Amino acid sequence: MAQNHGPLVYEGKAKRIYGMNEPGEVMVEFKNDATAFNAKKKSEIDGKGRLNCLLSAYFFELLESEGIQTHYRGLISDNWMVAQHVEVIPIEVVLRNIATGSLCRETPVKQGTKLKPPLLDLYFKDDALGDPLLTESRLELLDLMSSDRRAELEKLARRVNDVLSHFMQKLDLLLVDLKLELGTNQEGQLLVADEISPDTCRIWDLRIDDPRDRILDKDRFRQDLGGVAESYEEVLKRVQEVSSRPRHYN
Ligand code: UDP
Image (cartoon, rainbow, N blue to C red):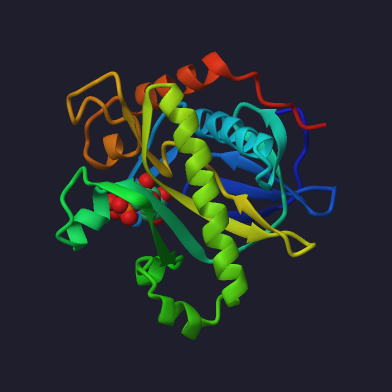
């Protein structure tokens, strides 16, 4: 890594965040640690930090090219990026194009059902509470944001899902669902933060019919299917075939 970082300001399950000399910016280190089921299952996967960092950089630049603001500033190395410091809204925004995962565990909706329009689910980001699903009235009760911001958040998340879905479709990849974290910068603008990677998206390979073999995301880890890094690498390979290398931060 070319640049010195400041003090560690936050360590999450998959990333470490450091301060920088430049106020308003942070350095993000992507770790190889893998966790699932609220960190009840843990492992380390060689190369995962690099893969998620690079893929996030490509996806953030794609969103930017479509006029969507993100916290991303540029790469420092394959597993470090610089990002704008944002105040993260403690909500996990999930967009679902195809029903699977918790939606099918918690409701009678059948696996594989196409969701048109995509289903938006909001979860309260709190590990101790197990990231509970939020209702609109609980969202209001918790006073997490104004109704205008709530509307803005949904519009932004739906655009992100549309842009990424179309892009992946061209690569024979199906974006099944994704989780976004949004934040506000010092000017109060809403932007896409955190990461966008096979850790936070479900991605299926449209070139493969077998329902297990087609999985290219963290479900390989959750379900002990093996080949986690190899499947993330396949996503990266397809993205790289059609994209120019992400910019270097300077
Ligand atoms: N997701 C995530 N972090 C979480 C929970 C979910 O990134 O803490 C992502 C997950 O990878 C999937 C989407 O959000 O792409 C929807 O996940 P779901 O609610 O189906 O939960 P799961 O089945 O993973 O428990």
